[in-house]
Image (cartoon, rainbow, N blue to C red; front, side, top):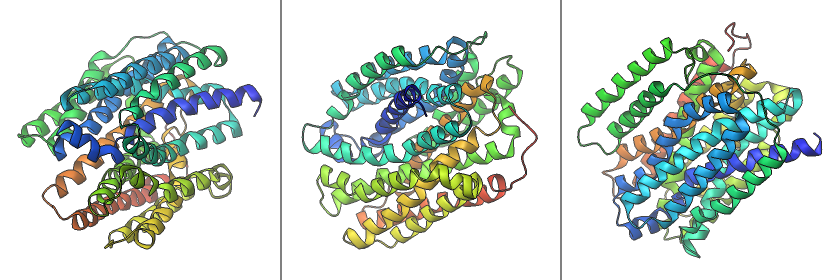
Length: 444
């Protein structure tokens, strides 16, 4: 890989790493944030869900915007919006304002995420693309793990707000670097599917709200399902849909999307509940709770570097199955947690780190399987929207199923059981949809 290509990949990965970082940087600071903003457990989960929902709800539109106006330009716009949103979150004085600004920040992330993956497809081919996608996929796991450490460090030292302020200079630097190094790509004539974007946002938000926090869950569930049906109807008739329905006619991609929702939901719930248990039961400081994730982070990074070589040797589907299975084994051992850190939590975290490091990149690759460059933005948007739906869904589901449990150990154990069930679903989906070697006939 030549020097300029490495610089381009670095810009793309830093941009993606930043938005993944903010997906979970609040987790180790949740206790401090709750104390500062006087939030209950459901309100606290919505500081995360607001980001994830707007991230997911607007991502399809962000992907299509990159196809129409040029991915470089839209990538830079997303960085600018994300920087402003981060600044506002850091300045928020109430929980309500923080939730609103997190939603605005999520819109910036929704623009960045699909354009980063599409930019990889624009600038890399062959083995270089395989390596680039592997690095991109690993950022999802590594970024979320590193965010625990950084979030805890900021909460314990300069304050949790600094975790958002730091995004501003980084985003500005990436805008300058992008302008200088990333080439202008081809633009495709077209128009926005605003109606589809609106229905997708209403559907996702209503369904998640029905699970976690709604006083009328049945009402919001019905609103969500009706909006989902209207979204499918609109997309089936739109000349340029934000989510081409053809993408779901390919077995590999369907499996990848279902797997992405369940796997991300499981991992985000793990990252959400574990720091709380460490602080409430073991009385760790936010920083110590973040450092507790270091074994997982290091192992994830080491094994993610092996993905390109292992993919060539084992194949994408088999490597994904191995990674998910190892993650499940590690998570099941955490169910029996009683006390302490090293034996009952650190060792299982390392096992989870091995699986996570091996799984994220193959799961990403399966989501863009047999996608041509013309639809790279839209397909990349679908991959990332499933990631964000999974993030919101996983936290909301496990929160709603454990909200009445007050003993921190019992609550943690029950959370791990539900998380393990989500991982088991990914194993089954991988076997049924992704593992078979015969290629699907439907390309996008």
